View 1 (cartoon, helix red, strand yellow):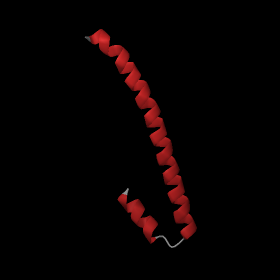
View 2 (cartoon, helix red, strand yellow):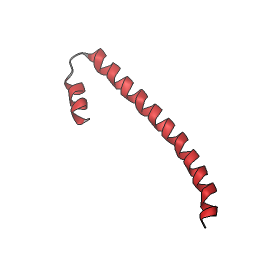
View 3 (cartoon, one colour):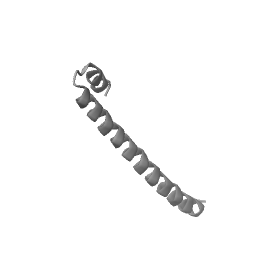
View 4 (cartoon, helix red, strand yellow):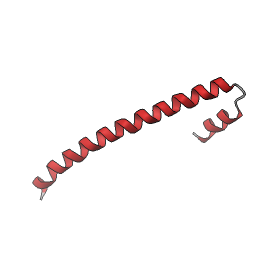
Length: 54
């Protein structure tokens, strides 16, 4: 991953570097949103399972 960022910094094509940065940031935003959604559902599930385990 670090080598990817190094290559982006050394890339002379500005448009390509900007496009890659936008794609990576879009993927990061989508991953964070999906993790928050899944995390809240898992929290609700664990909250409903916990009383039966006690």
